[in-house]
Length: 302
Ligand code: ARG
Image (cartoon, rainbow, N blue to C red; front, side):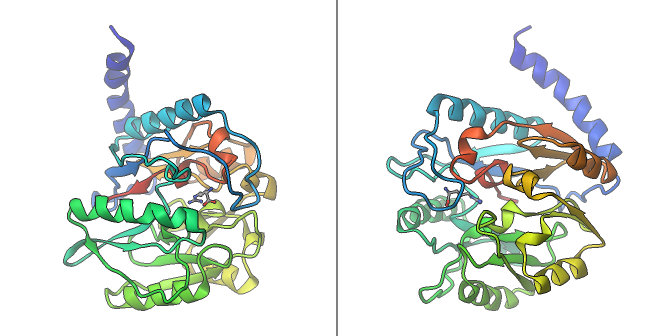
């Protein structure tokens, strides 16, 4: 039997078991079903935009790693949609950044980003067009020169009731405030979180909700008052070390009882076990040279 068939054959019973085993099963409404990815055809590291950037990438290895991530998402039960890569747009593979995706009473919507770097700003129009064709309402928040970087800094609480919003390095407080004013109209409260460690330049590098009650964080990446906000929002805070966070273990994807991560330590394994999540390790070394890992390379569509 060819390998893909065998894999398909094997993945279904395992998936079923994992979902049943979860202590915090997601309701079908919360369960993400589709993600958007962008092939890394033109991925490169040229202009340094964050402190992780500097080393040259291996394009062949990057392609393999991206395919492994795509396979892991499919194995976890997700449908993967693709947007065409565009030549010269070397960060387009990081699909978490160009728009914020949400759903209100009238349907699905996006809020286009205003990226801090001009080179990345060009990516936004391609994504907006993709979402417009799919029927998403486009909510253009008048950012008046402020910055907002999509799900790099804007993360839904797992129950979809509120949004956590990082600012300081990429999104600006003004951008987050203007976004918050727009979301207030739909009944979604936005909690701004101030980022203070330049290696944790996006919220998704140091803040990863595991379920409605638990979050994985690197507390030192936040101002003291922001840590208080996080404490008020989650019953359980699980702490990563600086070393773990610099190796992108705070950039995981929680999906159907699994936690997709670029690597594991005894500390992270123990945290995941306590929240009944099964780790799935996917190497992302090439993308880390650009400052991103698994979470940055997808955006949830529902
Ligand atoms: N090189 C990209 C940048 O600095 C990496 C983006 C990673 N994305 C993320 N959601 N953290 O813009």
